[in-house]
Length: 244
Image (tube, rainbow, N blue to C red):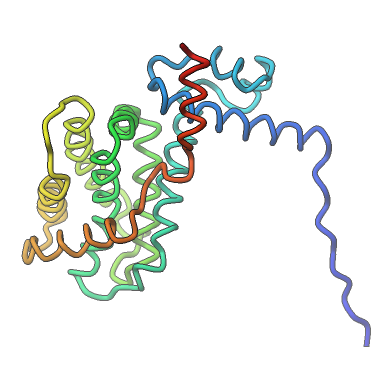
């Protein structure tokens, strides 16, 4: 009996490897610059200079700064949700569905409450259609993976439109963290987001305080952060020195 040979995975060509390395460097440097000095103050020229690449290398991988931003923010959002996978088994009740579906909302507000720059970047993300569209698609995938009650192929347009409406409200709540110095309890903001979600989707509003407590405790106990693995304090300090 012949044993099937395992097909070795082809190694990337030098040209493809160089392109992948440049793309990774662009994203790494761009995130650091966005986090240190903000999205608006960061230019593609700065990204190119800090990454040590040629203009063509950046525009070969990305159309513009907004596309770089979308790639970073949506990936960070998806990674934070993936980190939370083990905390949410498959759900079968409406209350569990609401818990799973509103977890991304709580995640955003928690991150916005922890760091001012995180709030600013997330608020910027809500003002970009391309980033917002990415947020919605990641959220839909998240709910579909965790609830037997949700089928993304049924009434796809309705679910997307409802989520879009909710994202408008959440963007404004995130903007409050970004644009004021007031002491804001993110749990209170999340409770509002939870009410908006239930109203838009016509789900029964009950046990809101218990649900807020449950979801926020998950976030706080595990300290799940959208940008946790993307920024290092020593890198920020060095960049601040370089940009001064």
